[in-house]
Amino acid sequence: MKVMLFGATGMVGQGALRECLLSDEVSAVLTVGRTVTGRQNTKLREIAQKDLTNLSSVEEQLAGYDACFFCLGVSSAGMNEQDYTLVTYDLTMSVARTLLKLNTNMTFIYVSGTGTDSTEKGRSMWARVKGRTENELLHLGFKSAYMFRPGYIQPMDGIKTKTAVYALLYAVLGPLYPVLKAIAPGYVTTTRQLGRAMIQAALHGAPTTHLENRDINALG
Image: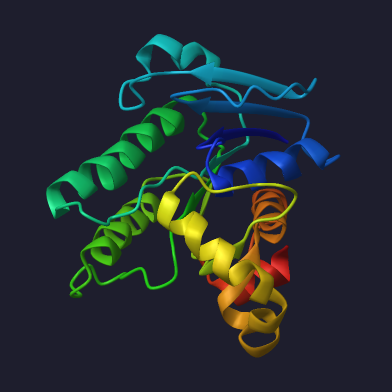
């Protein structure tokens, strides 16, 4: 399987990339982002693209892939709905439409989050926007599309978040992860399990289109 990965420098993307490079079932990985990871691996090729809403200049390099792991995302803290929609819904759908045109047999995996609002009518702004994004991805026409909704993600293998507030959270909760896993297994996962679950969903499918933590952990 050939995988395209957006957001490979973020915490979730780093985990997905690591698992892809380790997996015998993934033959090639292309990362697309504003910056490259700088990792060296015979499977890996990277594209740095400043404007991810317009991929026309690199389109010819995006064909022939079996799966896309879309791990791009920003915190909604301090953002209004218009700006958050621009970087969450508009960007994702622009990329997805381009990839669908080039890879009609592609599986698209979108990393959303626990609490995403599929009705698009709830009070939480980020949850509505994520819900709208999920809903439209599912109806866009990919061979398969899966919405991953992790809650607390424990970074493994030296992976770190670039978001300062999350870094503080992990510094506090990291040592407590075994306790969190014991008392609330349905609300926690790891970067390893998340990456492995994406690979399995792309290769073999998943029991549901919306994967919560329990589904992710079972698959990964």
